[in-house]
Image (cartoon, rainbow, N blue to C red):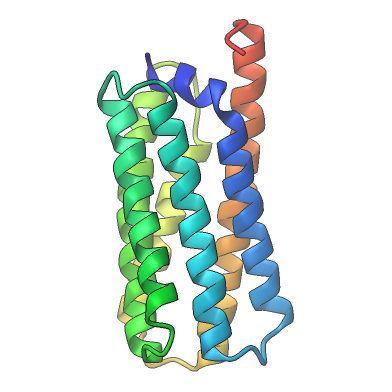
Length: 185
């Protein structure tokens, strides 16, 4: 099964992932006095939830090709990062920052790879590549400026999560429409 068809059939997993990202971003933005432990748990829930949704999408079609495996691998990474953040919530801010940066970079790479395959099926599809680039840029910025204030990092994290969530929602609804037009759903 091609990636466009797979994603169209499971568009709702992208919509849920986008919704989780927006909720995480808004919580981080409107509760700036949040403690590091609470931020770790919010991030852990976001990474774990997104990873589970990606794994579901990958396993739904019995891993018949590389696209399914890419979804499962990205999902497994999200699940692992989320579980580790839940198990060790007392990690330092710097370790959490590098944790988030590594996760964002890896996620961005997988999203760009998936976008490349998706572009072969859907003309002018740019939302997933934009989300992948946003993930990469966010991860690199966190690595470049690790000593910035916690509030700035919180705002960067919130802005990234909201932007990523909106892009995922737009992609989900675009794929849903595409799938309905082709009667895939």
